[in-house]
Structure formats: C-alpha cells, structure tokens
Amino acid sequence: MHILVTGGAGFIGSHLCEKLIENKHRVIAVDNLSTGNYQNIEHLVKHKDFTFVFDTIENEAVLDRIISDVDYVFHLAAAVGVDLIVRDPVNVIRSNVLGTEVILKTANRYRKKTIIASTSEVYGKSEKIPFREDDDSILGPTTKNRWSYACSKLIDEFSALAYHHKYNLPVVIVRFFNTVGPRQTGRYGMVIPRMINQALMKKPLTVFGTGKQKRCFCHVSDTIGALIKLTQTEAAIGNIYNIGSTEEITIEDLAHKIKRLTHSNSELKYISYDEAYETGFEDIMRRIPSIDRIHQLIGFKPKINLDNTIQDMISYEKMKIAQQSE
Ligand SMILES: NC(=O)c1ccc[n+]([C@@H]2O[C@H](COP(=O)([O-])OP(=O)(O)OC[C@H]3O[C@@H](n4cnc5c(N)ncnc54)[C@H](O)[C@@H]3O)[C@@H](O)[C@H]2O)c1
View 1 (tube, rainbow, N blue to C red):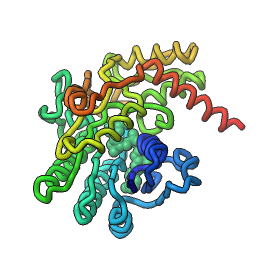
View 2 (tube, rainbow, N blue to C red; view 1 turned 30 degrees about the vertical axis):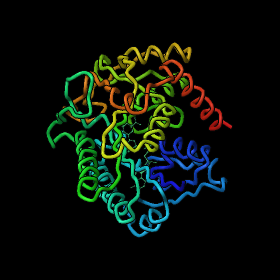
View 3 (cartoon, rainbow, N blue to C red; view 1 turned 90 degrees about the vertical axis):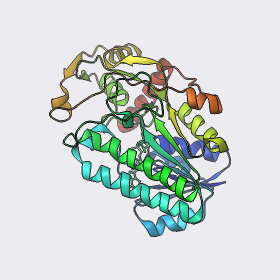
C-alpha cells in the first residue's frame, strides 16, 4: 500500500514509517519539524519507498495532492508536550484543530481510510480507574492552558466521528497513553527522556509536584504493532481505542528506577507545578487505560515491560550523547 504518515519525523511517526517500510509499503511523511527531528528519518530518506515532505498539514493544496495518491492516512501530526501546550496554546489549538480538519476534509474527498491520533488527556481529571473509551471527559477551566490540548484533541475526535457518521468516511481513533521509547525528546515535558538525560549528565532528576502521581508507560513498538493491526481490522472503523500499558508507577519511583538503571548518584529535586508549568497547574493523580476493547478486537497486550523500555531509552540517550561529543 501507499501510506501517508503526518508527523512522520516525530517520535511515534518515525517508528511507524520505519515499520511500514519494513512491511514493504510505500510511505510518504509530512512534517514541519516543529517538535519532530530530521535525524529521526534521515536513515529512511535514502530508501526508494520513502518520501519526506517538509511542510505543514495546514497546506491544503499539498495535502490534496498527497492524499489523492495514497491508500491510507495515519494522522499523527500535532502540537504535543505539556511545555509547549502551556507556553504556546495558540499554536496548539491551530495545528490540532485546523490541521486535522484539512486531513479529514481531504481524506473524505478521496474516500481514504484514516487513523486519527488522540490522547489519554481527553479523560481530563476524571478519577475513575481505569479509563474506558465511553467514559466522560472531565476538563478544567479554559483559563488553564493545559486543557487546550485535550479540548483540541476532543474536537478532532468529534470531527472524525462526524465525518464517519455523515459521509461514511472510514476513520479509527486511537487514544495513546504515555507512549515512550528511543527518539522521544525530553525538550517538551516528556518525563522519561528528561530524567535519563539528567541522570547521564550527573544532574539532579527533577520530579514535578509530590512525585506521588502515577502513570503507565508503553513501549513505542507495542503501540506501533497495535496501530498496524487496527488498520487491518475492518471492525475497528468508526470506533475509539485506548492504546497503552497498565503497569503503573509513581513518578518518584520512576526517578529511583532510572537512577538504578543508569547507575546514577544524582539526587531527586522536587519542583512545584507552578514553577514547572503555570500557576494553578492541575495534574492528574492516576491515569490507567482499560485496554479491554482493543484486546478483544486484536488481542493487544503490551509485550515490553518498563525496565526493558527504560534500558532501551538509556542506550539511545547514551548513543546521542556520544555522537554530540564526537
Ligand atoms: N507520545 C505520547 O505519549 C502521546 C500520548 C498521547 C497522544 N500522542 C499523540 O501522538 C501523536 C504523535 O506524538 P509524538 O509523541 O510522536 O510527538 P512528536 O512531537 O514527536 O510528533 C508530532 C509530530 O508532528 C509534527 N507537527 C506538528 N505540527 C505539525 C504541522 N502543523 N504540520 C506538520 N507536522 C506537524 C511535529 O514536528 C512532530 O514531528 C500526536 O498526535 C500526539 O498528540 C502521543
């Protein structure tokens, strides 16, 4: 198949492009390199089945030409990362809402199957454990920038479902829960790459808030496996699926684990949310996906545990540090 991956130079997108090429598909990636990195796809650019287009998904003329020619669209491009969301909500809302509208409108024009990347953030501050796909979204006020990301992704979901119901556009929505792995950058607030980097550079590991908040981290290769299986499953169309791990850990314990796995003597440095992000920043204490729905459909169950995931990321960060010092 010929497949478009928007956000293909990003963390998840670059792994997806790689896997699709390995599976003998032709891939075209569109990315404006805002949070993505050309180095993520540099090794693919020479491949005959890979094309990179440096552009924004808001460029309708370019997207029209590309989508008319592909069989499938993976829409992953988005403004991502708590840091970016809090500091530049205008860009987040514009990219995520207008960009997705361009993708859906164009996919609908040519009747192309489309997967839309959403997020566990859409459950907001719900305290229900675990989060199921039909649960309520409980968001904070519009004066708190962090909720703009969840809202923009909810609009994407509403739009995708609206195109599906009104025009029968074949769409699948996936809600990622903390997907991690090599190539993820710590620059925009992602906790594991940031802490690994701090440990390797012999700096204190920064823990935001009390560190008692819990998260589940899923290795990107498990996520990609699920994404690809969903595209091969007709029954997925018109539905929403959580994708993530159910192995829970507090951020404080995560810091200790990273210290142990990097053999680091660094201290933990606690930083308030106000200092780290914005005044009155609201965080979520627990966030566990129910993966029953996707398990029933395609048998999804993450294979790589957290220790192995972190080891994999440590090797990558060490390689990057070595390259930088060459
Ligand atoms: N990694 C996670 O834990 C996670 C969790 C929930 C949701 N998601 C979603 O998964 C998708 C991929 O995220 P990621 O973690 O790989 O982050 P990422 O930042 O590495 O990937 C996003 C990519 O989109 C590109 N991009 C942004 N705006 C664009 C635009 N207007 N035009 C073209 N390209 C643009 C960026 O340059 C980047 O390469 C996003 O939609 C994100 O919301 C990720």
